[in-house]
Length: 426
Image (cartoon, rainbow, N blue to C red):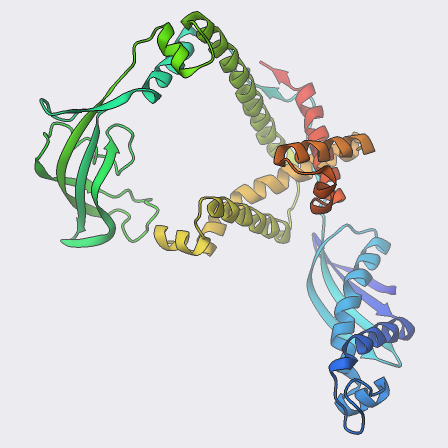
């Protein structure tokens, strides 16, 4: 392989002209011939026995060229980019100039390269201090949540429904007098005040008694996920079957014994305080990191290629699909249910993708400037952490997660820690 020319097309795009010698090209063509000959028939020869020259004479000289070129060009482009001191991201265009047994292969490739990154002052970034104090109210609220979780629902019949009650209802929704899909249910259990339904729906149940039939008038938000309902007025016909209120257990030592391994309320509160302190610290660390990342994006200059953003968008979409699958939903059913399509979802994910790309570029540049080194010990520890997280053998993890990916993740994390350690907390 030889690089014949390298011309800049735009900020992050170059056109490379690459030549592959006749010897190299014919060697690859011969590999394809040997791979495919068993399924090729040529008159006068048994199937799979025709010499290459006869196959090419019968089917044309270029019969094996396409597959040979497919095998050659990734490596050839990689070598050419390296020779031109360009950091390759991807290929956007490929044109064959010539291909023959005598002349070999010459082709042009338009490639996208990593952008130039200009960093601002990343050390001494100012961030707001996040309180990690656990207050008496925090502890009381956590205990109240535990009481609610362990309470029991009791049917009430001597009063109308109020916020906090759980009701059992039938409902059927209409838009412009027509019942709409997904707008009805029988014996539906709804906790008033949780805002599970459209704004105003739950409030209009308040004040009604068991056995009543009534109508609720609401308007779908303009940004409602099902676009065919967005901004439209709707009427729901409702039957209220049952009202239940939550009866909470007494807050005493017996309650604590029932829900925990502790014997007294004081012991339970002390343990709860420690747990809340840990949660608040972790939350504060995340908030601090998010603020630093936001500041990094603001002080990083780079003309990001569309290809990088598109690839990251596709990556985020796959992650979203995996999360849906974990809930037993496929992307096709999801898009149909909310009245959208995959292209719309990708459009919504694109700003997030661009931010992540910009952050990665910034951290990559910091790692370069700070000469961040990833040791074998770092890598081994990372594989151990992942193995423990998923409860599988470390060697299996090594097979599934490429070394380059692990190394890059560690490098990015070390770069971020450099910024965090130098941040000024006010």
